[in-house]
Length: 481
Image 1: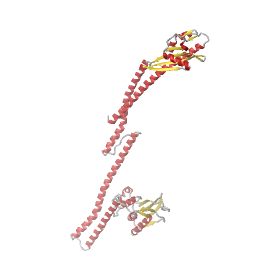
Image 2 (image 1 turned 45 degrees about the vertical axis):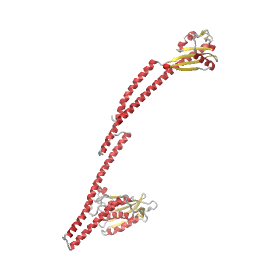
Image 3 (image 1 turned 180 degrees about the horizontal axis):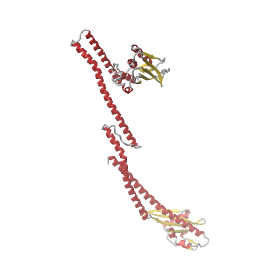
Image 4 (image 1 turned 60 degrees about the horizontal axis):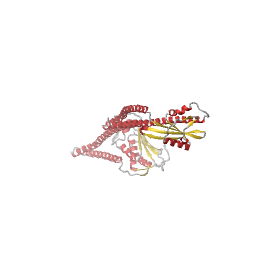
């Protein structure tokens, strides 16, 4: 047995011993008390009977049949030493019959004096060695309304040794049997109690070894069962965290691979072009073409590095952004003006009905404009020529909602959960880009507590929605459906 099992068994054994001892002592005390009490009450009943009978003899007008024999054998009737003391210690007589003369002790005479003085029953109890109790019972014998004599009964009450020890012996054997049975039951209960704890401990050891698929297998409806359920829940969360960690690790590897790829392409083009120029392989008009290509690739490389730095700063919660009171609709207006020129090159119409109210919040004007511009730029980039982009605004539940919906190719539903990851690009798109635009847009939204949601599907276009908490004191009152 392990330490806690031994401790529990020891506790159960101590408790059983305590209960057995308590029961034994309680039974001994109660049995002893009631044994004395029963004999005392029986003596009182016999004494009262003698008192009643003597008063009957005294009240009779003539001799009563059996009176002499009753007086003669009164000790046998009371089963104790019986004294009838008359006034002035004279011989008590009922008619012609008298009580056989016995020398009363001083205590008997003292009790008799109290009876004559008070006219009330008297009682005296004394303990003697070896558990013997002596008792003196005194009652007045009345004739008319006067005390004619004092009835004093003296007896020694002792336990019925044979019955008492027999009962104690039987009880002792029963308690010993109960103690042995409780020991066996305690061992069984302790083992049953420890089994789920051992299962939980085993499951915990498996968790420390990295086996997050383990289960306790304990389903009790008590505190241990609750602990087992929490352990199983912990295993599930650790398993999910482990999978997420592996996914993050894979994303990090993919990030490095994508970054390397994105950097390698322009660097390779620039290097090969410069090597050709330095080796004199190209000249004349071809030389200018190589120079323009190097410039183009360096601009692309600069944009990629800037996007990476921008995203890194936005995702760093300690990097401050400048926030001030502004009208969000004015920021959206500014972004729409900037994107109209790009939309006109593809003959794309922008539909926007601006409400007359103000949507006020505290934010960074430049970052918010960058967020809306990125959303509108993607809408224009992935929309076919001569299509329509709808920009809607409305209010719901104290928040301002902005929707930018295009009629482009859309994003497959299975790719929606990855669109905000770094360097992620839909397999359907053929447009050039770093794959960091949506990640930057999401970071700006998060820094302003703006909920960003993208609804899309293959061939259904894309709907980018921003839900903005407004200043309740100055929020717009016009609702646009």
